Length: 168
Image (tube, rainbow, N blue to C red; front, side, top):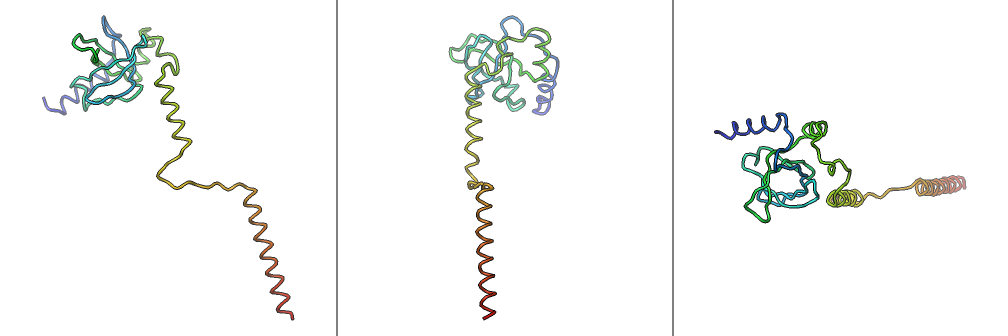
């Protein structure tokens, strides 16, 4: 099967309707990517562990922090405890919520320490500004008014002197 055909079938499967997790399957939230197609997730019980991304999803469907996944446990590893069965889109999440199959833990806003840490990092970035650009000095109205009044008084004084000198 060519890569384009494979991508087409994976995408069709991703966009199709989602069934609630069955048997051993669980819903988890992606916290961090670790490389080599390993991802750190948090499940509905609050446990944090590594999962692997199967070959069919690699380079076809991209995941990022906060993405929800359906996982199936694997018996082989101690560190890697599950494999991704399905990547959930926003539409899938709303379907699962309406069906009553959505874990209560993920309904909470800011339920994990990882979310709080990400918010703090984002706030720090906003406060510091862009390090690649020179800092912008903001002038207040009082400073600009005092500079204008100084310039006006200097120009008035010059005009008075030039007028008095020409008259002599």
